Length: 337
View 1: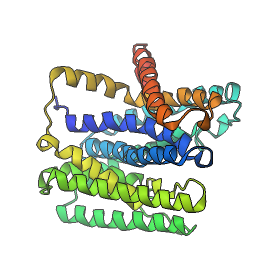
View 2 (view 1 turned 120 degrees about the vertical axis):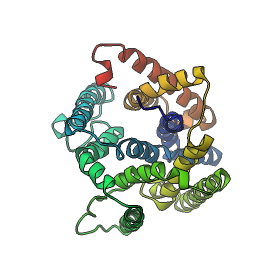
View 3 (view 1 turned 90 degrees about the vertical axis):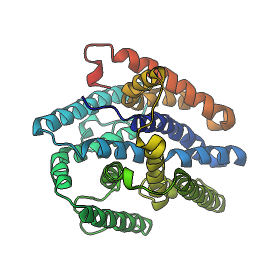
View 4 (view 1 turned 180 degrees about the horizontal axis):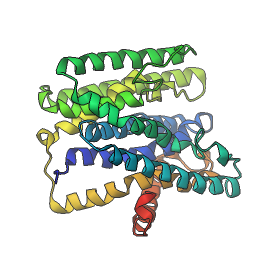
């Protein structure tokens, strides 16, 4: 039995908390005109720092899966599980949005448009898993030089795609393997960092410096453009933004360096992390229900972001964990979470 890497589990633990922070702070950042500048600055700093979470989820999947040799049936079972999750939660959010939030949803478009925006992650992940066996075979046949060439190609393609989007243009054809989004590239980045982590010779402090530098620059630019425009500017917070890519990669590499790549934790700490991580996917799926309830009854200007962001994040995290913990006790619970 393969030993669990707790560097990766720590990344997962921090990342799913950050996802909730993103969704909570977004509510306040987008209300820029209705809240105080100090509240906006507080929200946008947390939002920007937390943007590493989604890249980390893709990188974790790549680090864990791309180096494997698996039967096609195993990947088929993985695909079926994600499709079951997609259908189940789309139905849940259909009824939630239509009959509670009074938001129209066309369930017939389930395979083309999410019933709830945050389910986009499934729409990005399922196509990657569809071709995962071919990616795994490709990775097994690549040399170190080929890895470097792929990394260079992916970096240039991602930069091109982002700059093109800023110019409101797009390539006539998608870039093979990478596609028209950055998520597949994140998948490979996680694999490369995991594969070559023992060759990362620079110190943890240098990695931390890169993370803090790119994130700080992103915060500064986002705030300056927002103040100039008079409305929240989100383009620099997109996952294809080079600054977010640098922050995400350095954050992932930073945690992979802790303890020489094999962090040692106390037994009780490992048990809690295992418990939380087992529920992390389910927490991601369900937490919007509680956040949307808050949005329905409380406007951003009614409760200061200084109070709402930390308290709401903690409350949503706890309630979501409790719900998923007991859902997973049901006979079908693990299939949908």
